[in-house]
Amino acid sequence: MFKRKRASKMLIFVVLLFVSAILSSIPFYYQDMKEVNLFMENGAKKMESPYGTIEYLDIGEGKPILLSHGTMGGHDHGLLMAQKLIGDGYRVIIPSRFGYLNSEMPSDPSFEKQAESYAYLIEQLELEEVVVAGMSAGSVPATLFAINYPDKTEKLILLSSITYVPKALSEPQSLPVPEIVYETVLNNDYLFWCIYKLSPATVNNLFGASKELTAQINQEEPEFVDAVSRTFLPVSRRYAGWLNDSNNISQLTDMNLESIDVPTLVISAKDDNLAPHSWSEYLSGRIHGSRLVAFETGGHVLLGHTDEVKALCRKFID
Image (cartoon, rainbow, N blue to C red; front, side):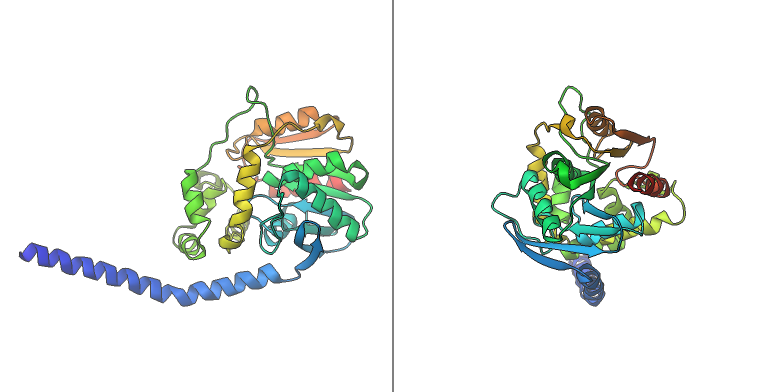
């Protein structure tokens, strides 16, 4: 009887401690979310289109670059990647893709329609042609844009590309954690925030920045990794886009890559488990005259090579 009472008291104590921890964290959570929302909304514009509302950034001056962000991104995430991997001195247009942030989900949210929406956007912005840069899953609509709108495409950059590859040639994707973890964590802002605060390495691992990889990078890049993790918030406003990407990726079919006749730069890391290097090899092998740059390490976000990637992209663009 004494042991049972003691166990009950211990359980009550643990529950009270847990509830107390949650209650004490709430003000910090809301403060962080306020800052996240301010960054997310800063400079964002909206355009009504046949594809619903398109939210986008249009910043800088110079040669226009259309950036197609990756899964769990948005225009804010795309801005971070543009600053780190491309740099200043260009006019960068970054639409939030279908289902991300304030961009609506049309009746047909396929990658093909996403490429169409890019064409509509640059037409409304009165741009004749753009350099198109695609990252991760954003590489698919970027590639389709180059295929379907060659007159609007000056050059094409594909980073850590997810694409169709025949099974006989494809190296299988190896997610760092089971898919159910993504489904649970990426649909709850508070849960994601708690994990981000208590175990940032766990969040980093979701996009392939493992402990082993982050231990090898220079002093500046841990800040970049942290910023990437932070731009996943609010995950609840990116979840629909993530589900749509997952569905579209599972239905990828062959693309007419041989028809691409613009200068193309493909960059990948051989240890990328989210978008295996063999996928980029397949892309480059079929795009006539393309250049493939492969790093031995770097993972999905090319850690340890961001300065090299920036130099490569800038030289290619200019």
